[in-house]
Length: 384
Image 1 (tube, rainbow, N blue to C red):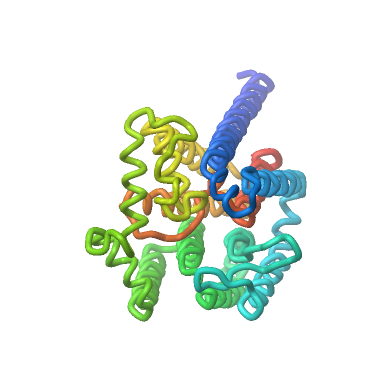
Image 2: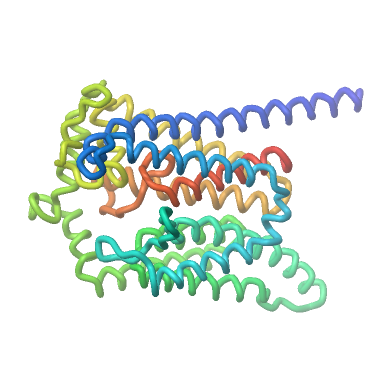
């Protein structure tokens, strides 16, 4: 066998596969961002005109957030991935401090204090905690793997101290999310972290214990909060109060159903005319499906599935533990959030009150997601 030729072919295959992953990841995110801009353009002009007198006010702000997100995403793409691991604790602690500040001094809207006002800019630290905790959690898991090997060689099997710190900071993060309250992001953070922990090599017994703790905690949160219980009851029977608590679900289903196969045409949505609440954020998928039809809604879901495939392949092909877990964590976080949003709009999940990644209007969630995408491209560039 010609070894030189063999390794050249293997290198060619690796480069070719990396190119496919880059193209798939860039295509999925790029098309989702374009669809988001189109949808925001369609849905935001009337409320912007009524509130500010400028029909392009919300679109301009969305484009500004998109620009900031792309710039920070490019920075995440260029930085050495080892530095991300090294300073992940710093970013997480800073994020927790911002959550604490929001808890005490945050701007309140809709009964929740989730925003930190910095002049003309409003930041939602809860959107960044998903990224910063995943970064630190993956760093802890990658370090704990080496710690276990060393301790087994020395005849010890103690629980790594890095994980104790990690779980403590996790508990603090969940506490501040609960205090806002922001249960949707709390559930997303818990779910994504649990999946990453399982992928790191946790046993089925550990996975079962985590699932039981999560289910028990969620049941307790629902039981001791009337509005969360109301959301669950409305999900089970929206017709019980169609003009009240079940109104948004009913209007979202009307929007999606009205679109038919090919939609009413861009800009022609009727539900955005004051009928469907939160049409720029939580319900953006319903409005887009009304205007672009089943074909448009299916395209959005297909692009998220393409993003999921790209993230899984990047994670599987990453040679080091940290990069592999980080790619999986970022992918799982964004997919869980997209599934929760779309699932609520088509009534297979209760209303979550969260943004649809890459599409919904908003600043913090879009910036955090694009930083995560930048890290995925970074892993492809440097590790595969």
